[in-house]
Image 1 (tube, one colour):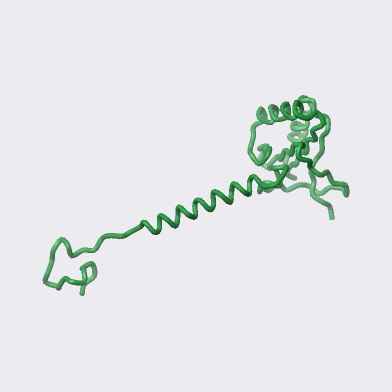
Image 2: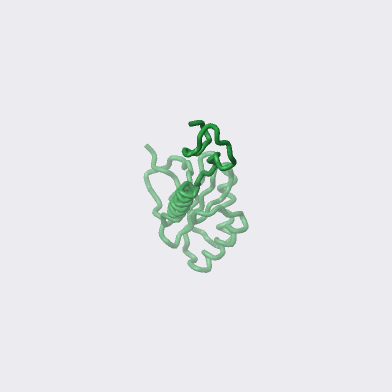
Amino acid sequence: MAMGKTPGNRDGDEGDEGVFAEINITPLTDIFLVLLIIFMVTSTVIVQQGPGGGAKSGLKVNLPKGGATDVTARTTDLSVAVLADGRYVLGGNVVSQDELRVAFDKAKVDNPDTLVIVQADEGVPHGTVVGVMELAKKAGLAQLAIGVREGE
């Protein structure tokens, strides 16, 4: 029996129906769709977990080492992460400077004693961190903290 022929044909029988060229990809497509749904659900859970967003939301921020005292985030506090490339992350979402200003204004209206925790990567310039703190001060939020990881 030659390749490409159906099992019932003889070598002398050459016809159009002799070539088997049908591949069923439906099961493969079903598997890929199930995997896609699994990845979408798990990535959403990773981003939304944690009360403070920022470093607790699956984003890698390499915080500098700090002192012995630690600031614990409350549910009313804002945690702003500044990534190494200068992007701002608030509540697990990348935001612009204008969106950050609006969030600070809203936080001031909701609770004037809101604590703003700035979690900046080690490679972020000092001016960027000061800029975020100035935005918070202009919005009327006077309680500011810098997030660090525990020292050795």
